[in-house]
Length: 446
Image 1: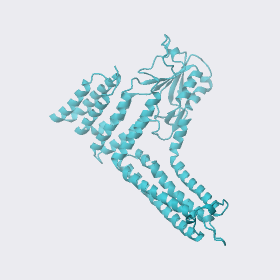
Image 2 (image 1 turned 60 degrees about the vertical axis):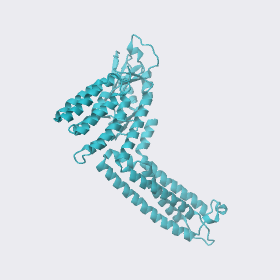
Image 3 (image 1 turned 120 degrees about the vertical axis):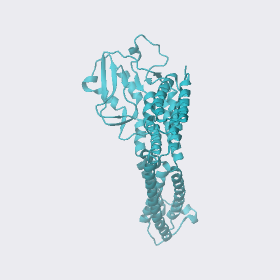
Image 4 (image 1 turned 45 degrees about the vertical axis):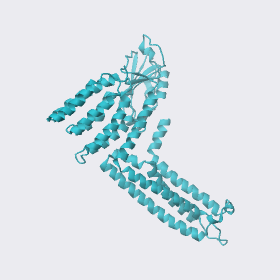
């Protein structure tokens, strides 16, 4: 439930922030109107220098209303220009890094809220025979000063956001946070390299009832369902994948024949533990977080831009991310298994009430996250050298089984790239790095 709510507010962040700014300003206007109309008699105790005449307040509020709306229009136009710059120079997926940035949305919300405040105060302001003194102009002045601060922050944010180094650093920090959270969540769970043989009387395929990206999974609920139906659930999907309706998402193994296959109760309950979205999200998906970095590197090495140094810079950060999962032993995580449980002769009985999840498919992730980069960089000696250095960074931190695959992948990279270089120095450069990789004897875990 918490994961679903976080994803919902992530999608609606623009509306929540803008609506919050407008709502705050409207409530502020109501409070000031109550003071100015003496429905709440507190102005008699306010400092005299904060109070102005009704006519002067009208002039100040009219001036600020026009100014704030003009600056809001300018801010929006600037945001559109930066969005266009991001799409053409970095990657369309990185647009949200600027558009959903707290400073960008809050600045627009503050200026629109100020415009609403001024209009609301003007609408309810009336001249009176007693010529009351009002405080709305002083509040508007304080609001205008706050707008100046937010505008300065917005200009600074724009100036730094269009710098490639700043964007790469933000993308790396986002991906690093998501990966650390994912690793921490599964850290205490049992991990295995291969799925055990599950022998039960009945196996029920679980199929998706919707289309979309799986952006979160309620694992605690899945464990409860496995215990309730006295079986073992093997998930065939991972967070971030796109699935279509009626596509298999898992298999449920049990020795009890009940109403699972009659009215599809279990399949519906399992589908309700999955959060489907129309677009991928970085919040719980480490692969998508890493993919955004790769897309910026791909744009850099494309023939239109031809900036291999940027791609090499990104590869170094990507190596730090991939090394986190390379250092973890095991591929599948066993959720719901009791810690320090004795292994019985009947492996199926041991895993009753458990969920198997493909947590760390390192070979597939390494291959699929680099195949596009290799395609564009395989004929550039600096790019090929960077790819081998990338593998070296991962290999020094890798688990034994992951290290074996990295060496295999190094052979694949060597066979794919070395024929493209006929000069001796280029071949020597590639051979040296390839041999260094093969010479690594063991990973961090013996």
